Image 1 (cartoon, rainbow, N blue to C red):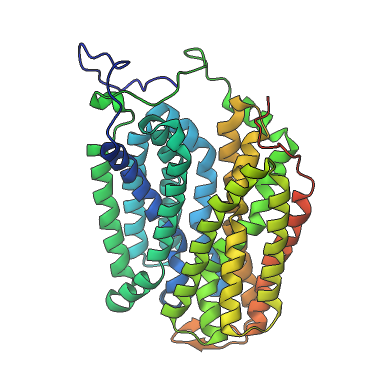
Image 2 (cartoon, rainbow, N blue to C red):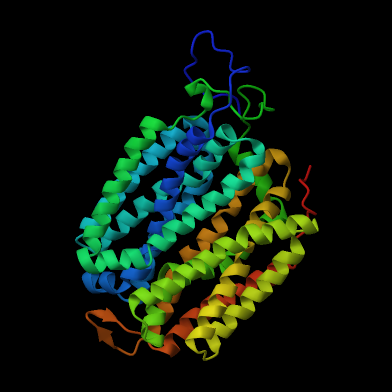
Length: 441
């Protein structure tokens, strides 16, 4: 892409000779966009530590609770492809500002929701709005940072997401116990609204708007020629690897999002007798291991010069790990250790993103990335309500403070859906075509 049309050049400035932006300014601009991604990840997993409050307030069963949580994913998934197109036309600054504003509105609606209908609507708005953060961060990174720093910035993006997930663990639960979940969500809305204002004031699409030289590569596309979005999408979907690399993360990443994002905390409380705070610490450790596994496994794949072997091995290890967790009685220390190890190997998600981009010609990389980013999110979208539906089918009628309580047998039945998806993931990845870490032409 060339320079955004909204850049206001200073008269007489030669941007080819100007200095590149200082690191502090670059990280500040990027960091404000990253904060929206942090908030989005926080919103993604927040329901896990307030399941009891949501069930009691809205008189929900597990299926309805799973659906409430999944409303975030419904809109997030739908927004993946149009987000890239809108970002190209609007620029990251406007897109992030609108996204943060709508996220604040959705969070306010969720906080004041009198019925489950309005709570669902709030989650739907939140998912759609924060979906713009990741693509916008990457677009800012290509302009504000050297190409050699892109991997570092991408890793920091994942780190910011995990920080949001950790905040939605023990800190969120402590705040909820003190102020109530509605009060905490109102504060979250206020913070998001403040971020909206800060993004508009401080973020710029390109360093040229601040009088600095841009790191953006020269465009290779003739002016005014962007091709057909629909045609590009159809081309990406014509590659078998695209379908495989969309479906595989549904099981692998979906297992993490379903356990850490919703059902892990109530499972650890009701089956293993843990306090909510301790259960949240364990799910936070799972998310941290997941984040650490991504860049390390990706680096190993690069050194090998192959994607498929590491992806197959880690998928098999994830299947074995979840199988033991779901079907074998384990002491708590063994359960926690296995969750962390399984989370680490599930970081093969990063390999999948690189694998997907390399499987199509360079001109289709952006579309392929948007399509394949839908896979992990579809995992949460399908598995969170799916596990809840099975839990309700196996409920024995027990409640505690207005919230349903499920026994070990019910959770084992519900988590069997995760195991089945993991089996499918392992089978499918065997059919992927190796790219040898080289871009298709």
